[in-house]
Length: 185
Image (cartoon, rainbow, N blue to C red; front, side, top):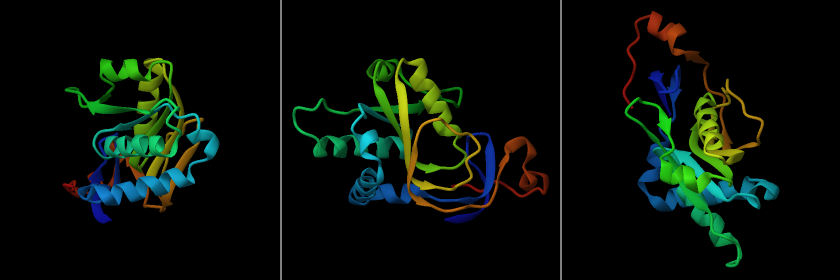
């Protein structure tokens, strides 16, 4: 966890950044976290998951791992989970490529991300899934900052929670107003 002035890339700024990407350096570490996350997901939710989708980069890596581990826990006769990543387009916004949109269509989708900051990323992902004809059924993350400002009407499950300092809309950020430079991460 790092203190400073951070632009989360979703329209919000804040004083604390958890670099969850450090967890992904060793695949065995993220496998363990993903297994633990699956263990805390309600059975009713896990039993419905057909697709696990996540935003690039940490969310996509976690989603891919969760999809594979879910299949490892299911009977061989159960249809396998599909993985779908959200990518950042040239416009700087998340997109679901047409190939993955087709995979999501008509399916129940669990959204996964490494960290939930404001909930805006999950909201965008849920909208993209719905636009592709899929149904978001839950969200899951390794770490929830407990600073959500955008909520969804589906269950959210976190492996760990920590109330971080407030987030600020970028255009009303007091750190920007004070001239504090945005830290690189």
